Image (cartoon, rainbow, N blue to C red; front, side):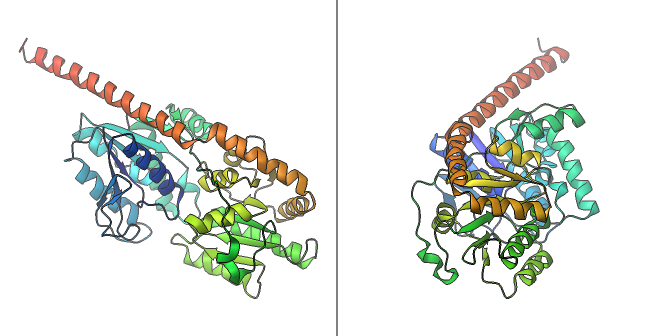
Length: 395
């Protein structure tokens, strides 16, 4: 199969759940012998990089602004894809998938797939018009592609309830970390194994990082946890400079709350493998890859009580009320004082990721969706040609 991926910033993944998803899926598809193309933005993937682990990278221009970056790049990618004779085009994110009608109309032989990963219009960084467009993108995501993949039962049920459109549930996956990295690469932060809480997230308001900082800082101020405990926040902003500045202002003068910036590869693995527990305080999610990776690394999850997080942890770990600083304080203090329960939850996390979030199994299921969509498309086209021939009295 010739398969194209559109909507992501690019690969190899640096930060971003969609980028991680495409990285994992595209590379595995290439290893299976498929001809795979990923459309990338040059501000994310170096322009001199033409391929990655067997995947061909297609660089096309865009304008790097909050409102134009994704949709403009998707437009150019979609137009380019019309002339490439792909067997399947796989769209990602609500905004980009709004343009999936173009190949649906002009590439009758190409199967159009979309992954419904999150309800992006809940993100506080978007204004009214952007949210309205993302709602339109959601409508198009559930109506236009030949096959729609939802990463959670929650999203599938939402589509059924509000759009009367069904989708195929295939969750995100997780890569299990086999070996703990050394914390020596973070000497300047003086981190100690098992003495810090970790979150990995884009620094955007709906991720509620400000709530996590308030809760942790209050515990330290009230001396309810020992002085050597730290909080590490790994991640960068996404057109949210004002919010990032607010977090830095909150953290000014502290050395126990570490804004670590974007971390990946060996450094991210080291942070995950040596943390005490993982905190996911967000107000809105799809199926968080950061949370799944933390579970794959054997960390106990402490998550906000949104349905998406509750579904991800499968009854494991610890829950707090979304946005409630005092409840989060109580839960962090409880975890510090109950290391045995934290360890047990961490061991359970590994079992859950092996059972539910195995990338090899997931990619096999996605491949089956491609195959089915292409075969169905071929049959429809054949019937269309027969009907056309009959109407024109060729037969």
